[in-house]
Image: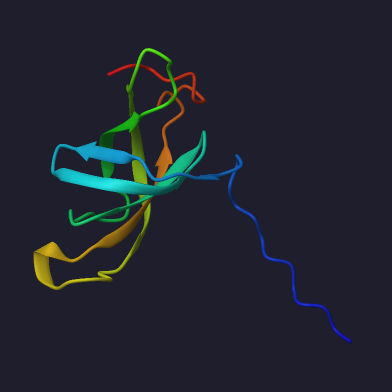
Length: 111
């Protein structure tokens, strides 16, 4: 019996399934997963591969004092969709590679 070919893993850091709010200059979204090197989120905003973006995520339980905003910069590496809806309000999946000075490896630079 032949085994399935191994899938090449391109991520440089483990990802974690986490749904947290995302704020962008163009609108909002919600993460599906994130890691120290990137994140994937769903949004009605329009993006292009190669586009540089700045975004803020809100972590509700990262700090006992309350919600914590973390800001990063990155580059759009993949867009999936539109999935649900039509036109400008269609939900798209967006994968972002975080710049090296982005989340500071999740040391989290506050907004």
